[in-house]
Length: 132
Image 1 (cartoon, rainbow, N blue to C red):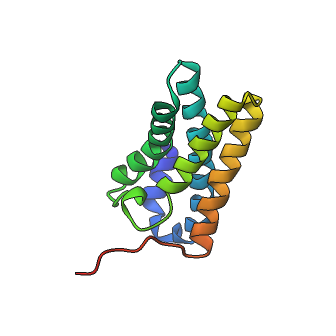
Image 2 (image 1 turned 135 degrees about the horizontal axis):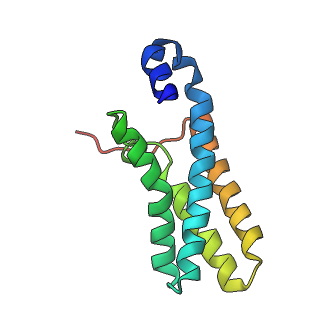
């Protein structure tokens, strides 16, 4: 409650922390994608459901955050958000299929997601949109 009150009162002074928030968001996306995919695989699901659930696990937190602050979710904008999640979930699934150690595979997937997301923000990579 204290953090919410501080943000509510000092919101105008918090605009300068947008970049660090994006960094932490990229880290959270990577970690949640890796753990969600690993949990799905541990539950005996196949590759496609595991990748799907891993992506939904990672992206869902960002959607909830954006909806709670009345913004369009990042995943619905032009930014790279879902693609890094799919790639990270695919890394976990491929590692599981190859018999690689689960912890190493999850760490690699989290780094892949983080790196692609941060590079996309830093280099201003966007998906094309249809012209009107």
